[in-house]
Length: 186
Image (tube, rainbow, N blue to C red):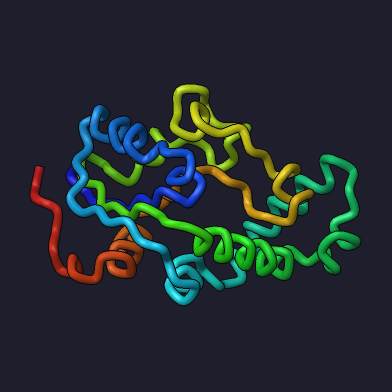
């Protein structure tokens, strides 16, 4: 089943000159780049890109709470709260600031089950848990503990839409000229 998904190469990937290698990895897997552009993202678009609903914020904040608990650190002392949603809001702010800090490469990637296959190639969101052959496993070793200690998001090189509906929304946000265009049938 042919699908389209959004991929963003984050400022750390661009700064480290990994864009070509990452694009090659996607293409070698049989996926096609159907749209691509380099830009410096504005905070308004980024705030829209990353959800503001309590469910998403709670998941993001919850990961930080788990990391702090596992490492024996006091999340309330560091963040001023131990509420997962409130911590998630802080993390989202770090993420928006980071994503606006330098150029990114935005791409629409198309192919068989593109959403699932791109996520598989990209690897676990946390590079220190990513499979060694995945993009994040090959090119990053960042961890939540290092990121939290430095008051920044985990630098994991790449964003890939997690679900088909999310991909459609994100493509519309980053490539409004493509709204209404469907992937060709397989």
